[in-house]
Length: 549
Image (cartoon, rainbow, N blue to C red; front, side, top):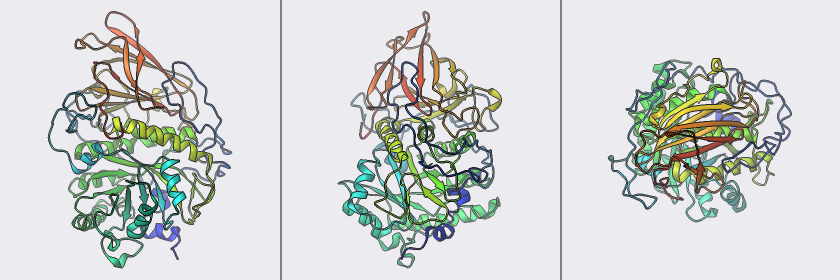
């Protein structure tokens, strides 16, 4: 008989204060009667005019403002030093990494010119560049699944890989593979020593073979330093203990992707720095804030990934608390998932998909836990639609390198910690010359990237969502006006249209520009709460696309 997840969570450091309950969040509010209600669909195209949200979130409790209390302590700015692109943004106490030249991507995925070769890729970046984007939901200690559950996970939820907990190796992984679609893949957690919680005496990988069919890799342990109460030597010792597990897994399965997952603790900046010396492939973190406090960990892990030449992945909230709290709405989920894209994250794991009986956590995608046949909640459809967008954008996103993130607040005094306001030249972008945001309480965030040719790509998000921090705790439509200066643009750059990505298809679309004067053109983007737009200046070259594009 499986141990209770409540007990297992304590054993593996997966306590509610870090991978579950946000200290200071959701205290005593009633659980949503229908988590995530409201609009289940994602607005796919870039709107050309205001469009009201098609549904009202079914949330029986009041909006919850983020109280500003971080899990286990403040997440101090851990940004790496500037990597070479001039950046005009103001400092926030630590300069967010602005990366320069993109890594090598090999042969041109879009069939265009041969891509520049800037040197060998790390194991993790090579995997990201050459595989569909990692989109998953964590399935915790549920045992071997029936075929219909697995079919729905891939076909209805639109995950691209199974994500198994510390009991996943080897029997659960084999059981998923036995009933999964051809080519299905998995990541499994392991204990800190590299063994499996299902049968720890069996040794590394739970006694399973290296390179099981569909194996992507393994998360070893979880949240180093969680029990150290802010003591850095203790946290580093914990990290090094997991590093021994990483080495054991590497010896057992040399070609697997191996990674640790970090919590948002005071000691995490020191841990991220030390992590650079371990033989790991991905930087991962979990933090389940729903407001302004989300941006510091987003930036800190982004900076660490760029500095270490590793892709960076994250867990996204799709759970509630047995103790009672308001749920996750469709706009919350859009904001959460798409903010990861904005920062350049290339792995997305909903925490959690479903779970065996837990005294702390409730799955919000199903009406019951510990039941493979449980009915779905409205949030399932909303998250599934988001996953489709992640999959459509994935072929482009996996080929990009983040060069900067900027934030334009409606109220400058409420600039979220860890963010910087936009200014000309931010992220090394040579064209954007003015930014204006309208809409009641609407803030905008911008992510800047370069593709393998060095062409700039920009993402823009309306960060409003139901459980945001004031003044963004609403579902108001936002209008973002962008002006471009083409005075120094090379010959062949269009001044009348941008190239955009249609979120409903993933295909390239033309976004008309309004000519302002001889050198300036502008565009008005109207975005639903949580939604994004993706575009590049049209220089005659399309978006670079990797696998699945």
